[in-house]
Image 1 (cartoon, rainbow, N blue to C red):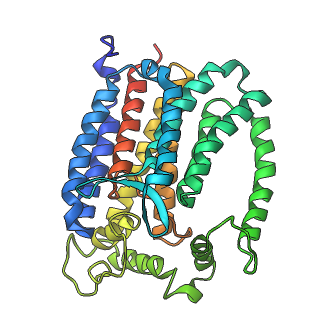
Image 2 (image 1 turned 180 degrees about the horizontal axis):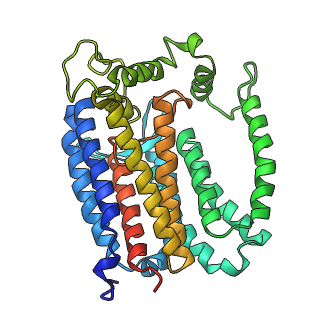
Image 3 (image 1 turned 60 degrees about the vertical axis):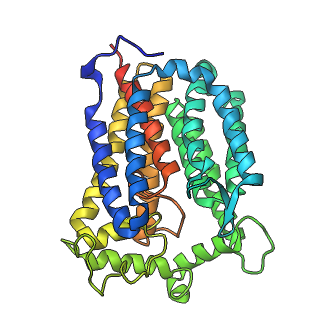
Length: 371
């Protein structure tokens, strides 16, 4: 399974440095947001780095032979969490373990589906743009997507749809199919949202909580003390940091974070903590690191020796880019509230470890570049 033919000059040390730099910022930011979980975050970074390096030295082409096992295992986990999972705040997304540790199958689902489709598409690459294979890909994605959507987890299900589009594009989907799908999807999505937000409608497309988040984004002044409260405080925190920030773990009484005006600051709104304490410079550094990681993955994808490697690297880059954009968009109030973490920064061991595992595969793709 370990390939002895790897050459050190093909190892992507740049990507590792970018990931570790961003993770280091995350450890400090999480410690400021909630001191009690900083040590867990640090241990997650250490364990994740170890797994990333080990996976990078394996042969991903051998591991991908288990692609159907990955898919079935993923479905089993998503089914189990639906019936046996731990429920909190109206959502059933986690397995609860002793010691306060939680496992969220929807986070590992992103990586497992990338690996599954990388191998599945490569197996059918000659007939990939046929109606049969495209339809089969849609059906295979629909099952795990539906289980995640019904948890309910609208934010992750949206990311999954974006990730599926990236996978299909990286696999070589015809532009004719892409333009046709876009032409149908945009008006259909607009109609679906319009129907879902009807005030007197009995439809179950969106939960009341999800409707409230979208309406709070459209009419923030009407929801300033309820649903829009967190986002408005997040924007205030980021703005108050100005250029230099108020300083790490400052004790200013005017601090939005110190006043506990932002809930889940260590996860969903970690960017607000960074903006307040490290200012515009710190915020820009985080955005730049997220972008450079995504771009480096795309660079690896362009040099991959086979379609599976291209799909893995491009999809991981897309996942980091899309999820970072949504998380920062929520914190800056340019998108409705979601429950997504900021890659490599937010607290969340399942998310962190899953990303490190995915990056291990990207590093392995880089080691097996075209001659």
